[in-house]
Image (cartoon, rainbow, N blue to C red):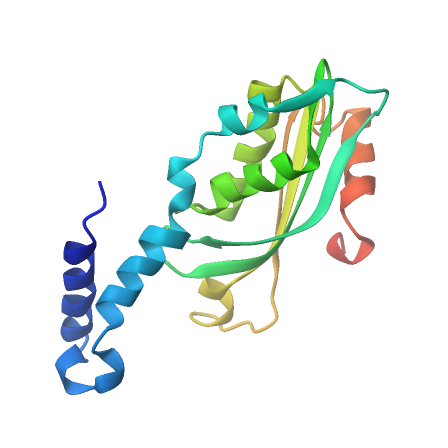
Length: 193
């Protein structure tokens, strides 16, 4: 159960603890409520989504396709360590067994996991695992190419840096023929250098 008032009060207290009381700056007067709404209505909505339900909406039996992939799904995630975003694209690929889902289901699956407090490494593995577990794919893979503000805006401040993470499951695991086909299908040459 989301308690928006408590979340807003916590943000206001956080700002006070950092020496920026909301009462002292008109630009901060509504920050607590706005941040609480952003998290409740957008950043953390993935917890209400069920990957099994998303992948249950299959469009038919498997086709003759060796691989089905969707590239460049725009997304952002929130790092659970610093609560800072990472933005970029996700590529999803699977080798169908008995069923296929619509391409939109792959985008919804990304949204299901991306709208949680999640590490990029966990995101890609969760998506690949879900495709094998809930769709029955023979193999699945996911690549996330994200610019984490934990790296670009703080700490090392490596502006323009991107992190690339690859997750695979089933027959898509490294060393398998499908793994090579997966990487060729979804990863652009500039992403593997």
